[in-house]
Length: 346
Ligand code: NCD
Ligand code: ZN
Image (tube, rainbow, N blue to C red; front, side, top):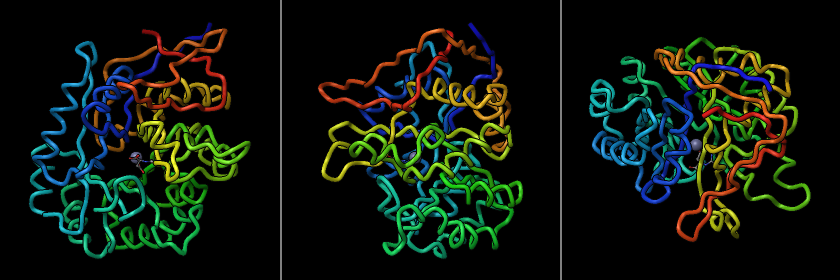
């Protein structure tokens, strides 16, 4: 048996939803992670400080007493966001960052931004106060092929923002392409990226080969193997500009296995085992700690966690529950398509 001890990880991109789903999924994250950035794409979205405070209370209620876990709240940017209130929320410490969803880009993004110019004054304020901007980086133009939407976003919207506000702290979230890796590497220190376990584990064949696989459908959509390899190379290199944001995004199975299936993969339950296995398979287990516990907190100017966790490599594959059951509904746990030998020592 092999064992490694690492600083307790953080997850810099999670969806907790609300009510019964929230109660079921929060413990899956709080069990192994010390902190997480919580996405605001509820219905209705979290657009004010008061909503963020109330949502945080509901999350805290769902954390098991035995877990020490801190949720960091975000505000959903709309074209009518109030700059003064956003600044206050950030300065009060109730809100950690703001999230930019191009309108229509993903789940519950209808209230997002259609015209980036409309929020430039807000982004200016954020740059002044040091408030991080988290971006879902895909264009929504129907003429652009779904597999090219992230690349197009770099060349248009992201370039537009960065030319004007190079000092703005930006996280390009859940990156999926080799072009994003290069773009981040070539930019200044204020632009970084998060990467999900599913984009490290799967390429787009996992959506279509042998039948359509709605449980592997997420946005940005899985890409070709060449892109997955670029993500693997950079994640396992220890490069401080890249870190974990799991994008764990629960949907009921019946909503994914549908005529118009929801985008989002729920991976909180086995996230760290999947990552340990991938890093191990690429002979880089020594870089896991940088990716899951160090790079993100350094970028966000936070201290690394004092606690640690121990990962153990078993001789036999470790089995995880395949689904969370909520009343009579199920949320499927991510299947990475590889055997997992790593587990967290409790
Ligand atoms: C996320 C969700 O379900 O809220 N879905 C997804 O496919 N990743 C939204 C998001 O992060 O894009
Ligand atoms: Zn997300």
